[in-house]
Length: 407
Image (cartoon, rainbow, N blue to C red):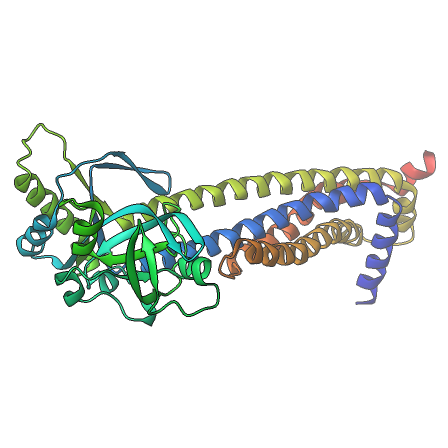
């Protein structure tokens, strides 16, 4: 133990003599550790956020969209619209597939909304059925949601999102008050829970929900709908249900074999999988950058250790002459190289932890720490020091006292 402390003291004194080179070598290891831990933490956090987003859409959900929709990156884009989707299609899907638990047709259009002197120029107004909240995992925070009686009687009632409530009423309770939706007065009967943004970037809290029949007859005067939310009986049945829905709609819309569909069935799991793949790519790129940083740090440690060996030939020769063993010399330089890498790794862990917290707070991401990332970063930092110190330590043992005296 005494010998180890002595070697450590000599190592620190030696490294202090080469402050700039030591700092640069430490910086390389620091950057590798920092990038590896931060990327691992962010990837785990984004993965957790993606899982929550998938759950927020609804359990075992398929969405039938009128027109042609293509998945682009981690979201969806409407390429062409159609006016052929209707409530009869929703009924046909529910009756024609053995894998369907429930369906909920809906339509949506943006309208200006006004309360008093406050005007919101573009709010997404969604006509829905009463079962929309169950299928889409949406809940009412205050008041109540739309009922069958509201839909049957074309009641002009509305359930608003939290952002709409904040902008129009600030701190006042909006339940029971009237707002103008495209000049049509509607009574507010409820406020939805906060939902956040969906995968397409749409703000789900900036929405107003109306009874579907009220929406179609009093606002858009159209019989067709935009979406059908479909809840499948279990996750394993989603591919089978999707195939049956496509067959039912093609038959109902009289689409021939060589004709393109005028609808798109979107599996939310597939969309979220694409988003997960994108995050995996980010993690891989972050890992590559960490490897490059570790290589640069290793080369820095190797170069400074070779320089130290050359500068300390006399010291090494004297130590060998008075009885130092080869393993003492090897241990000496391995400790110096390991100290550089350990310092860089320790600083990298601490700063990456603080940086991760700041990123989570600023980006409103779930707080997660990657144990695998921390363990891998620590192991990599120590390994870099040991590997980079092997050659200089071997070179140091080949220095003979007689050669030093002759020089």
